[in-house]
Image (cartoon, rainbow, N blue to C red; front, side, top):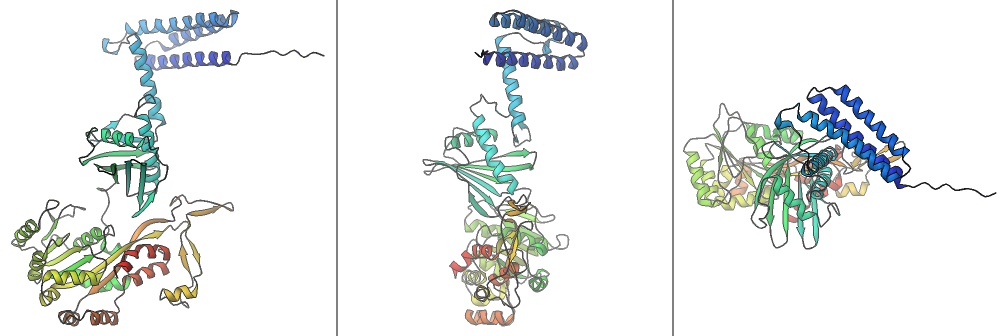
Length: 540
């Protein structure tokens, strides 16, 4: 028996479907237009449908495929053209359609833009809140927008603080900082798209795209259906290394944390509450950069009542607007003389509480020391611990007697990431390891560690709360040195070793001990404490 094979062309059914789907889309668009201008929808829709059926019948009836297709397209195009001529006679001149190649190209571009907007996972806004158009696939900027969506999809769900993109000779590097820890994102953005991404963001922020060296700053907003809307501060700079873009996320909307909620242990709260009620003396807050100094010093100022006390701040930037507080700004990189003059002017108004973000020089420290009997000062220092801050302060004050008399307390701190409560797991610690940490092995039965995973139907899956990081949010750990008369006598005698022993006798907790309390209660992990304390140990 001989089998007969019947071969069917593959591309003809595809072409047929393409023509008919294009016609159906055009008829659907006309239906919306009919409804918009209250034209006879039923009549025109039935007419277009009838012409379509006739066109298909003619196409299938004629044995030659290409001739049949040509006649069918002419039928359908004629019906569509007839509607255009009809509607142009019914609508205002400004709403009429122009039949030209440019009109066709504009219609195609409009449809492509509509599809690009629908496909985009992130919507962008300029600094005034106006929606920015998503570039269509034919636009060279389309690849840059896709890269931006990739970056934001990696940052926003994880509550990232900032994103840094560097384009250099070796390609594009992306660094996402989450809860103070930088995570390199390898191969997140194609190296060839990196420069286009930076230029695209410059354009969105209304900045000079051609400028490659001078620092520029701007702002946009990004909104996604799953993560909401976020304000993004942009900073561009060029160097010999390449072009760098820094994206700071939701800086202005970060809320001030009340002092009670910073992470102080109960014993530390009892120690510091009377201190916050004082109206004289200097309190120094010391820690390395990016470890929460600004939040802590603002929270201490916020603990005072601005309606019964005169409160002023002297700083380069206002991180939080405090109600009733007079925020005085000094320009960035101001010299020490400018800071001294501004502080002297503020003191002439007899404030009761003054906050300084930094001590610019020894003369400012001496001004503080001399007026501390009548003013409560909160002073920020970039020092690793309380004793390092004490030494710097005494040297700046220039006199052990005045320096110690003016000082009420020094607070040192670190920020540690808090374990994700959804995916953290407990474990029984090794007794020998506990002894090294100075923890009682008979009282600490369990500690916790990060996993970033949850078990679903006996299979590990990425935790949806922390997105596999294992941590979510941060909390402060503190070392508080409160000075009494005996402590000041030791300082004046230059006996800092004896001071350490005296404070220890009075049950002062060192920074690492306070951090270990957080680990024992399950707030953080030993590995996170080790990371956060690395600078502390190196300074010692």
